[in-house]
Length: 357
Image (cartoon, rainbow, N blue to C red; front, side, top):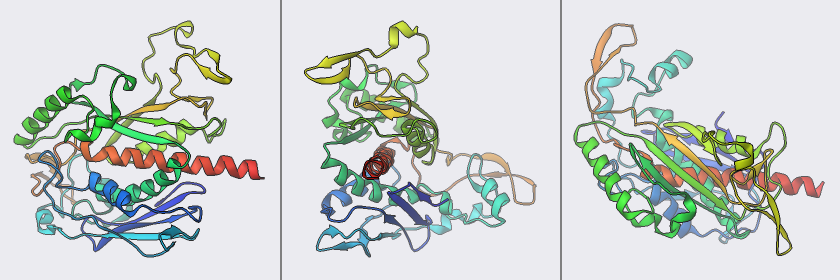
């Protein structure tokens, strides 16, 4: 299960401390002009070492395309790409090769496969998301031609949360702060909290909000291919994600008479006066903004002593070494956007395939 998508398919490969990570993107329409600076910038938003609140691991994360592009445009054939791993410190993990780190993939991977790459988590490392960001960047370039825009931002770190919905913030300000929060005052509080947690060798989680504007009516299937189910599946496949909600989500303390989205004629276009549905009704996009929230747990790698067992079941203690994020959210923002772009792109192609047939 290393491939994601139906018509627009991304297959990822590689491990945290291997030679490289990368992917193969299949199903991309021919003739799409690729903005290489944009694609690299998306990777730069995800890469480590970009600020004092992220892991200090230094990687250029320069993408190299191997196929599927001619004279700067997609050819309709598989697009293969890779990013070299340049700054592995595999020795940081020597003390972990025979123990199961709490809340990591160590135990489940070893139980399932009988072998695991303990260097940085191997395949379970968030470094795998490089492939998602490249694929998502290409999807974004296509969706941009359809006036579909996707933006995500940090809306909560620990107990510090934005108190207003996305319509009350200037989303063009997201990149102005290291934590990628559009509220400068809240961003400073979030950064201070992350630094406090980091100084103790601990970690903290939070929430990322994502908004998709310009989605046409009709994306998604009514039963098993619901658009929100695809978005939920995409988000829950991201490392450290523990929850997904769209529209009102778990805000259930209302009556139907209070939250139904009534329709009206908006100068010849059918629209809704409210958007409690989150842009999706009966699993199909209704033309309104799609918005959802993704909950991230505190990163499992903490620089503190923890009780565990080794591969033989003997009780022991473990303490991680090396370079790690105290809070994954700032670097996860472009990953959430990328996965949303992959889903919307895939479902756009599915909808148009149906029309063609």
